Image 1: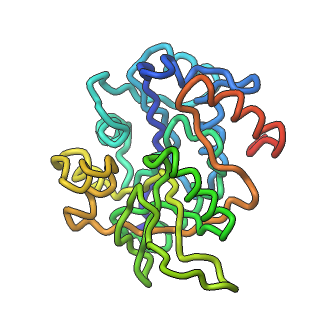
Image 2: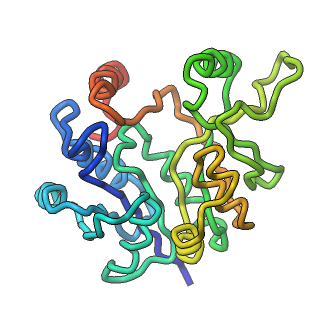
Length: 264
């Protein structure tokens, strides 16, 4: 039986650094509208839903044609909001792709890679994405971490693309540089797919020691034995980015001006 896949876009109004963030305007379109358009460009999906705790976001989303599911304002994480949303959908999906509502520069083909992973391996519990660094990207990441050590996450995985570990440190540590091949360093992209069973586990399990140490929620899965498939993706020259604070908006707009729109 073909499993049903839904994309859920958590959209919270009460961001501490940018209140009402989903409604912020980026080059003439709201942030949530842009992320919804990205989700709608993905093939093989049975539904796209915006999960929000605020009627202002819901009214705005419904005005541009999105389907909305209301969640409680007590949800502390996007994962918790996604799990609550699943229970309130008209028909519960088998697989959920959790696309963050500020992921405005995530190409549709990156989301597509997770959908395709679940279509090809329907028994997957979780899936996420990563980009392999070239030497220039690796050196830039090293330099950036000198001043912002907690920015950016890397991931290592086995020969079967199952995650071994995620870290704010650059992993693996390179003792020497092998010329002629890119480094085995992968920058993690914070998008996740879950089976409904795995999503329930992630939303209800207690935080774990490594998760708390690194402040990376996905480590809760690994510490509880939930395997995570890593889809290696190519941004095809596009720049990765999201909106966390007001200062990010002109940066995102400049990127769109330089590289063009991801979707019409």
